[in-house]
Image (cartoon, rainbow, N blue to C red):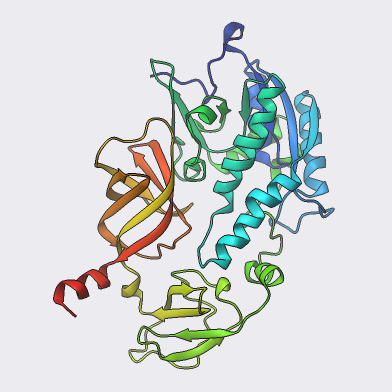
Length: 387
């Protein structure tokens, strides 16, 4: 295998490409664009306008896609010396990411909008437009690596620095999308401070700009408030595993499996221990809570699998990641028809339908699926005892 800074090998002389660099206005995407240009590629910067009514300024480290962000991206492009454009993808983003997010919560599931944005916006809508205009690749500031095999096929791998690795949110990319992706930061063995230092040496004013976090289209971080405006309020019951009413809520969509804070229960648990959200039922608007051990999951079923290459044949041993900053856990997995069946070697907690499970073979990303259902350890034990 060979790799060259996450750059696809194209037909142009010397392997140099026409590259469209997605520039968010942050430091990572600016440094990625600068590295691509420094490597000799013909780079054009583009900022994606994803909000129909963008704010003028960011709120600290929250949100993105403001007018300030587009100006920061433009200034970075000027310093790098590359052409720059703003593309309006607000309507596509609303349909494919924001509305999907609201619909999933309304159905009692917990989506990851960053995966959906990578799948539907950056490496679908943006990539399709880039290819139609004659570009060879889309460049982003994600921390992940692309390895080119001897036969020319490409693999997605974790970043060399696992602390910054973002391959989980890229696990939805298929072989075609990987063939036109570029991640210049993926082989970086440096701290974020060193990336900022590189930006300063390059004269990029975004060097000390705070990283954005949380959900980019919910600038104030109030997910429940955002959903309440979209879905309205509907009082329902919070119950224990026996169905005993412990309290009320104003919308089941405001909870996620594994949640501990914000339950506001007036009745303490008999054992005095904290309670967690176990299940969310949008049909009767009920939230079920219980002890931490009731969250232990031994298996799951994933739907809508996407493979970063050829699908696995037969059962195999892998590691799995269940959230963006989660740990690797050993699993066995098998594709049965169009469903991914995953079994954990040891029980894990806080697995919610709607999340993504991403499979790894060492550092290589095998693929991902959306969690549709889980099998709890307690339920299996009860069935085995005949209870």
